[in-house]
Image (tube, rainbow, N blue to C red; front, top):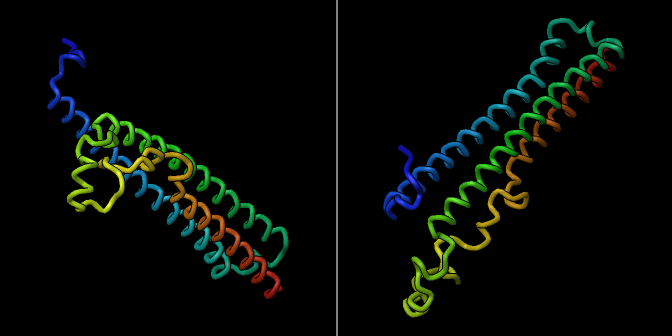
Length: 176
């Protein structure tokens, strides 16, 4: 038996929205943890692989061809990591926009629904100059302006690749 949305009472609808929002926020948290793991794993591999090569067998990086191969391998690791970080970013973006839609459905952006603008001015208890639970700017959560936190992870991986590649070439020329 399927239940129509119209047959839900208001309390049941609100509980569904609360549950959906909690689930979405959990998924965002998990996606952020995955982003951290991808970044740490990529940076670790970028540093450990050439470090291992240098400490175990320095003959491997004594010629230009070997340095090129290691640099290409480092670049490949970086490209794969950036690809997965960008995919995670897209997923997080979708989740954030879904949270905003859920919050809209809950009425958190409606003026004077929870906070009366007149009472707020009289009581002077609210630190905000609007009469909604969430500010209108929060409607943009999940848009490109709001979702910049994955960019530092991408930059960290790219900068690690560049630094390690430079290190490999410097060590190579100092050993020959």
